[in-house]
Image 1 (cartoon, rainbow, N blue to C red):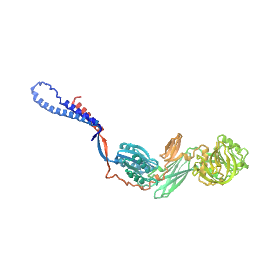
Image 2 (cartoon, rainbow, N blue to C red):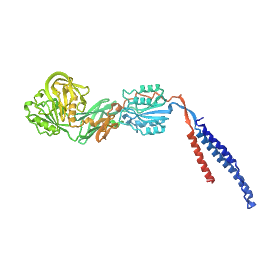
Image 3 (tube, rainbow, N blue to C red):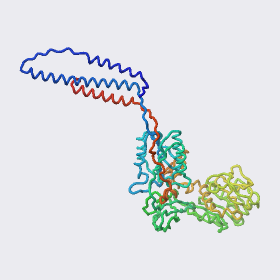
Image 4 (spheres, rainbow, N blue to C red):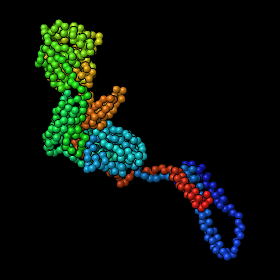
Length: 590
C-alpha cells in the first residue's frame, strides 16, 4: 500500500489524546446504604455492573480508536495495486439495430433474444455503438451499469447495417488501449461488409473481438422495390424460401379496397402494378411471416386532382402524346388547329402544329394566357421558323441545322435531374439555332453550345425534334415529361413524397432528418411515405457465414489496476460514527 498524502497520518497523534482521556479516573461518590438487609444483593449488583461498565467503556474506546485511524488513513490517500484482466477494463458493445433484427425468434425478436448474453459480457468502462448503414456512437466511456441500462432499452429500426464500419469506429475509440469488442448481430450482411477482415485487423491491434450470433434461417416474403412511373405504382415482392407460395395482397386507399392472390415461385420476384390514388395508399402482404416489417408498402400522393393538360397538335400519333396520355395523373385534352378550346387548363403544350392551320392570333392568346399565370410548353419542329410566335418567347428562332451532335445538360434541376447522368443523354441529327433573350435560361445544349432546352418565365422550350433524335425511345423520355409538367406548375414529383428508410430528408430550414422508420410521417408540415425496401435485410432465410471464432482467453493478460481506498475508508468511518451515536443514545448518555 502506498500513501499519496503521508501528512494525513499525523492525525494518528489524536490517539494519544484519546488514551489520556480514558486514563483519567473519576472521583468516587459516597453512597449511604439505608439498610444492611440488602447489602449482599447490592455487592453482587455492583460487581456485575462494574464488569459490564468496563466492557462498555472499552467498546466505546475501540470505536473511537478505529474512527481516528480510519480518518487518518483516508487523509493519507492510500492506493493499492490490484491485478485484473487487461481487456476487461474497456468494452465496446456493437449492437445491430437493422431491420432484420425485428425477426421473431419464438416470443422475442432477434434483438431481444440473446440480450442477457451481451449484458453479461459488459465490464469496465463501456462505449455503445449502433451498427446502422453509418455507425452511431450513443454512449462513450460510461459505467458498465449505465451501458447495460442503455442496451436493455434498445430496439431495432427499419434500416440496413454495416458491421465492419462499426468495428472500425470501435478501433478508433480504443486507440492503443486493450479492450473487448462485442458484436451482437444476426450477421445478415451484404457482400461489401467484410466482418471477418475487420475482426482480424482489430485482433492484430491487440483487441479481443467476440461475436454473439443471433437467430436461425426463416422463410420470408417481403416488398423489395417500388417504382412510381407516370402516376402508377409497381411493387416487387420476393419469396425468400425454398417453396412456391400463393399469398394475398391487400390494397387499401381512399378510393379503393381490394385483395388479390399472387403466385410467387421459390426464391423469385413478382411484380404488382397498382393505381396510386390521392392520399395514403397501403399494400399489405397477408402472410404472417417471421419478419412483418417488410410486409407493408406505403405510398403517398398529396394531390387532390389530376393535372389538366391541353395538347395543341396536328399530329395525333406523336411520341409526346403517348408519353402524356400514359401518365395516370394527367388529364390530356387534344386540340387540333384551327379548332382550339378556351384555355382553362394547367398547362398548354404546342407540338407539331401545321402553320397553315393556325388561327392568326393563336400565339397571341397563348401569350396572354402565359402572362396571366398559365404555363406553356413549346416544342421544336421542322418548320418552326414558319410559326409566328407573336412575342411568346424572348428568344428568336434561327436556322435549321443538320448536324450530328449530342444533347447535354448544362444545369441539373427539377427539369433535367433524370437525364443528367450521363450528362450527354441523346444523339441529334437536326435542330434549330436560337438567339437567347436576356431572361432566358439554357438548361441543355448541343456539344457545339446550341441551346436545346430553354426556360423562361412560365414557358419551357423543348428544342429536340423527336423525328431526328433517339431520346423518344429512351425509358427516361416519359419520366422527363412528367418532371417538366410538374416543375412548370411548381409541383413535386410523387417520388419526392415517397422515400426509403436510410434516406435523408431535407427540411426547408436546411436541417436534415434520417428516415429510419417505415410508415407515414409528417415532416416539415409535409406528409410523406417511408418504406423498408432492402433485399439484404429481408433475406432472413440465408444462413449466416459468420460464426463466433473468438472466445475469452483462458490465460488472460493481467495489469495492475491502481485503486484509491480513501472513499472506502471514509465510508467505514461514517458507519462507525453512526454506530457510536446509536450506542451512546441506547446507553442513555444522549
